[in-house]
Picture 1 (cartoon, rainbow, N blue to C red):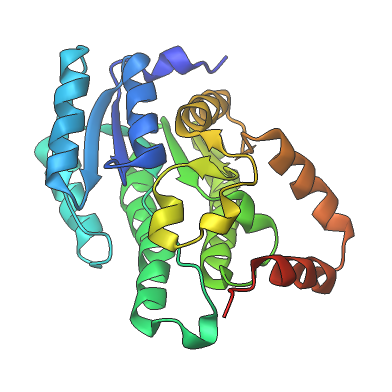
Picture 2 (spheres, rainbow, N blue to C red):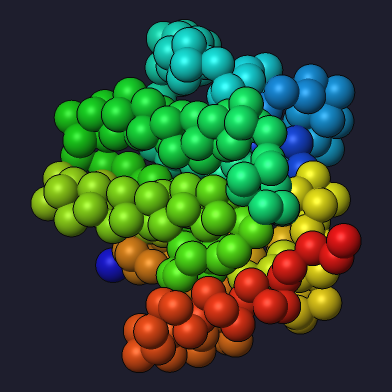
Length: 263
């Protein structure tokens, strides 16, 4: 039976490892004996986390990369598998959101969100999963969101990218399960992280935030067990169930009234 102890001495690649859920996932993996490859844009934060984990006995590597660059996934592969590090655990965590009316949003930022939240996930997954399939072992976690279960006005692009992530993870999970590779979609609700500041979406913060540590712990245990959809927060599990029975126009009308930016 699969168990989280199977992560011991395996190399785990964590994208977006400089803050929030990414940091928590790296720490939780180190707790279970995994070796860490940390990647993000901010070297100072990665170096600080690597030093912290090394002090706890974890073997670490740092790969600085900007997933807004289509060449970055290939560079990450070259720095890991290309350098002899066998990546058995891929954590597709990097991503960001922006709050506001789509019609007046920055087009470049919206396109960048699609590249980081979706395109980079596809590229990294294709590069690393093929090797896991060949070895007949591996785990991949795609960090989606509870926002993936229905459209969210004023977070329209972000919610759409996370719906893509969840659907992508579940489809690939069915393809690779027979090769001994587990793929899970992690769907956190409101989580205490930098997301609210980066996305300028502080109005959603009061909806009962969960700690990044709790999300990471629940997510990795679910991945180890082969659970394909992991929803760490109880209220999000309830919402993901009942929205199936509500018309989308009703859902979006309610959210639009709640989230509409003040003039």
